[in-house]
Amino acid sequence: MHTSLLVSHLGTRVMIDCGLDWLGKFKRVSPSAIVLTHGHPDHAWGLRNGAPCPVYASQQTWQSLQHYPIEDRRLIKDRTPTKVYGITFEAFPVEHSILSPAVGYRVRAGGARIFYAPDLIFIHERKAALDGVQLYIGDGATVMRSFVRRRGKALIGHSPVRTQLTWCQKEGVPRAIITHCSSEIVNSDEREIAAKLRVIAAERRVDVRIAYDGMKLNL
Ligand SMILES: [Zn+2]
Ligand SMILES: [Zn+2]
Image 1 (cartoon, rainbow, N blue to C red):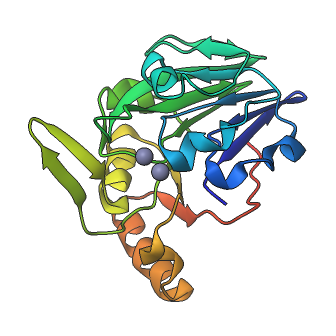
Image 2: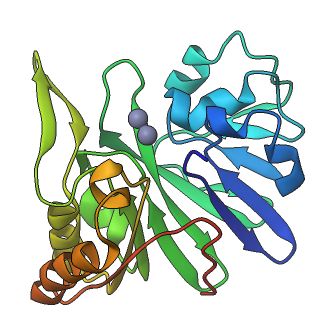
């Protein structure tokens, strides 16, 4: 299934991203709301036939989904903390795609603060995004190699896990989970990749783990 995160707090369940794999299946998650990071197929196309709940996204993401039969469309403006049933989402623009501009979310519920960005090259306002964050959940497209390509003045692609862990170190984020993993991680020997990650993480004094389907965490 395409990568998705369910944030729950006091009975509210907010699903972040709903890729094509979730088409016809996400109703059983029974989300109170769905929040989107960007309009790519693996993040938004599960909503092709509509949604049973309010959907939150940026103006640019809504533009790419204008033909979808989603009734309750809500806007999340960049850098504007937005309450979604008691859970606060703040969108931070991230470099990733020209046609489907993406955001990462700083999510606050009770005393917990996390940052979620499944696809990114960098966060435009990283310091503000990661300030006081207990857990960074990031892009597992590549561990060491760069997947960054230049298109005119813009950059598209993904930053390696190594770089993301350096951001965590710089901003004092103690824990990271790597999600949306590519075949480089999925098809590699689990112990080997875990060992490799442990070394990179230890150098940066960040506790890192690779996400798996059904992974649950209490904060
Ligand atoms: Zn993407
Ligand atoms: Zn993606």
